[in-house]
Length: 631
Image 1: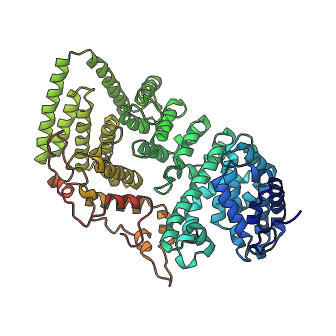
Image 2: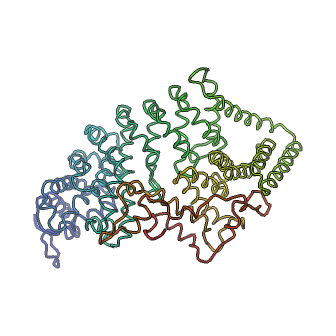
């Protein structure tokens, strides 16, 4: 075949010149020849056409042209070459080629099942599994698990992935160890970072801070894509015994995409798939820590809140697991019983009430029966539902009288609160809730939120979470009552649940930025000091590499010294731990009286100094961990 060469190009058969060929048949023939010959060539500069193919695959993953001309065979052969010929791999810039080749396979199999079938027939699984084993580095593991995850997604190609029994085990190990691997092999020692890793992470832009940020993002993707691959296996009951090992299950609630990969359901997504099948619910129910974590996620600002709720409902509906989890699950679900719609879940609150009612009716006496306290909680909920029906038949005048009586009692509670009688105030808010009509949701939001603040001051974080969650569930829009978010963030902080506290605090700031309430609105686009302090604290505590840093030590900069990251994340005490404290009685003042919601800490809310970061700045920080010197 006649070689296509641009007059200005010194390389015979140059791929970029081939792509400029105007004759379609000549162009296809030249591309076919290029793919066939490339793996056997040892010329310099091979990474250039491969990176070009990578760009094309990313931009046009559904274009069949290269698939038909043999790109999968070429990429598989290049991966094998890199694995078997270390001399070639270390020459020129060939070290980049296995990464690009695996990425190209993953991009072309991302959307099209027929492309995945073609890839399968060319034998891409075997070289991808070698990368998954860690034969090269974590960077290649990341793109290998991505590609295998795409192949496992389709019904026609999953059996071939599943036939390689090592893939599932490797994915489980990678999900558990990926963050530690990236931290200890790249992030921790700045002066030991492989240059090609840095180039791939930053696309040649360089800079230690950018490298670190991207490494955190890629580490999260490595874990999340491993979980996605495991999730494909979890749909098949025969693989659940392998997946449902206690040492793996217990870690799943803590595996989340972080603020750098928030679009992935991560661990909670896999737990939902596991709980969907009877074989998976048993092992989950046997791990009390998982059930507690599901309850926390269900009562949080996590985007995947509905997945945790699904898990709790399925565990209760299964007669073989209900008695194991009922006393832990019921309190969380009762707090959520007035949710109307959550995502695609319509009338979710009604579903919760029906499941709880069935649970109460189906559980007999004896060892497997729920506790008396749990029964009372369900009965109280059912009484409230009956009360709502009864109120629909009441004359409006009677409802107005009830509402006025509730207001009087609430004001008495506010007065007690202001005088420092927190227990008395909480009792008054409870009395007002019993009087307030069920349909007066705005008033009930305030009462629940006020009582949550009382629980905070009485050092009762679980009760505060319960009341704040109830306020958020009946608020319109759902989960958007700023003060309840703030109070729940504080309660989760008291329990040491950094992720849940962080998500609520971030949402609180977002709500403040849109609020018309002068006590909440962020004047001059500045974030309140007290909110910024809590967010900083929780960003450190929920940092993706936190456990790895505690185990291996802090970040080391050039010269062997311990960098700022070592101090921030190295496992010591939080540097600003003494700066954050829950609002005390002396800090509390009333708001302007529009809704009689008691304040949290007006002294801090009113202090908007000019040196505070802007809302735009703190939002930027949400998408990355704190810089080493940022504490």
